[in-house]
Length: 431
Image (cartoon, rainbow, N blue to C red; front, top):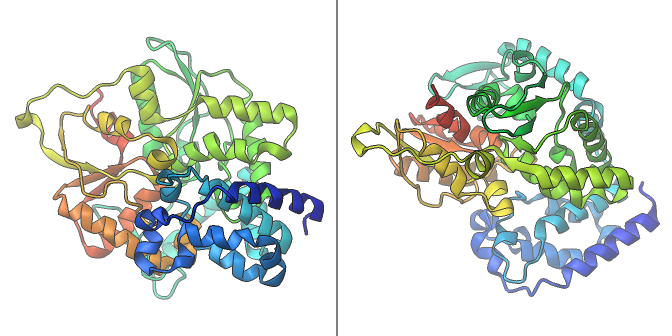
């Protein structure tokens, strides 16, 4: 159990942030969870009201408070549309850490986050073995989307998943660094778990694109998770360990920018690493601030720093109808929306078309999908309906987790729509 003085200090900081909320209810109109359930307890306003009495509620009913806090996608829709500027995500992240510090971490989560995720080399070996054995538990079900479903009775339920890649990205591309050429820029590439282990083709597209533009790349050895799975479950200890590990890896080489092809990793490094860095040493805090300031989504880097522009083509040359889904962590947390679209429209083989509600959450929410799959799938079906209504043959996005969710929904419905990352679409246009 955490030190009570430390908990008291954290709670006081939380209370100082809560007073900003006016209870206006604007969050209701944009909350994807509330749109499905209609429950006040599921919307930001309801959770913030609960947290005002956190000290009393934490001692009276800690499990109840924790369950209500965990029923949140952490999509940031409420924060992005709050007229008072309440930093809802910051509050919820801190509150989850407080409650976990008071209650302790569930043994299964402790095994996953501290025993596996916070030990990157062991985690890599474990996933490599899992990729070899996965055929026992899953079978291919969709040739276009590359989805699989569970064999017989498995914990996967009705999900259509993407199988683990064999081999993963870290076994396909050697770590090291390359020198910049024409662009005169050098980036560090933060790969992330899903790109490494499920979508290595996305990582390869990033590397190919940087090579094409003469951008030097530093790819550290034994890279690790950004820490968001642990932090979103309140495990600040595993999160801190992963931040330290990553700081050591990226301190080995100089670079101009740190790029990612994962919206969640980008948001975590840029926003949550600094938010939770107060326990780190002053030197580590300075490192976190420096890296956060340099962190960019790959599409933002290519458009804003390298100068990629839309292709000047005739409509008759455009063949494949393409739409785009805005990841919540990219548009709502970081304000990055135009750059991925520019990247997509730089490929003249595609004709871009906006879908309705392009920035409505897909319903993935990381661990939310594991704990509340029914609601997650219901939100995901709304996204699937909008994709299909666009009549596009391909839907692109900038987040591997969103790719998983859309693949699941489209595959279950039998839709013949490809799911790709924006960098993959752009890389296809390169000679």
